[in-house]
Image (spheres, rainbow, N blue to C red):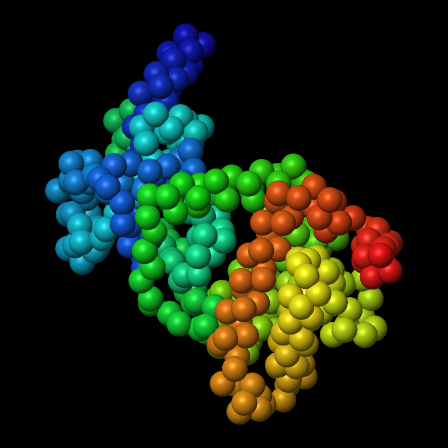
Length: 332
């Protein structure tokens, strides 16, 4: 019994003295900010300070990661780390692999929410974790291998974020993830299951649109996202959805009419895609601008949901609640 207690005490001391370091960078992101450390989540920080970067890009890392990966991180405008004071979030892990997979989930959330700051194709190809626990020294690498594209279908395009935009990214991700958590979100749920909310499905379709490089296919995904929020029946779908998007975002009669007509144009392209037809040449040429316009609309819709309690209640309401809401607007 005394031996088991001693082993337990040694294991506990090892956890207390655990050292864990994460290292990565966001591909296609250029950080245009003064040297420093900018938090995006409590466990994810962007580092532009040269001294801190040098202390993380050690010779041990160079030897294990290889010259190509080492040079990529050295030449990047920033690196991603977990501050030492935040590493207690990983104290329950006994190996670097599950710790890194957890960190990558949080990096994935940031990438998913980044379009709410500005259009981009940011990715994260490889991340590393080094855990020193007792006499062990674990190294693990993994990554997020989906390729994203801009709203117009462009890939491998640099985007620049200022210090103010990094702060906005932090704030938006906090708002989105807090709301989803409060409404019972779990990553275990399929986005098309009954346990997922309309808002969950909407965000899932928006993210899916960012993974395809063809604007016409993006339009189909975004239209499905908008149906997830506002659809209560499959009859007169084009008219109802176009009308509801216009009413939801509001504005004067001219703005709403323009938005209504824009949505009908988008649905005309969407119908060709979903019914397996080839896309008319004129629609194919227009698709990049239509796709960009749809993403801009979705960005405004998300901000309304996050910051307007009445509209938030709408998208989390029943079909009857949604029908009554738009009926009152129509006849007001």
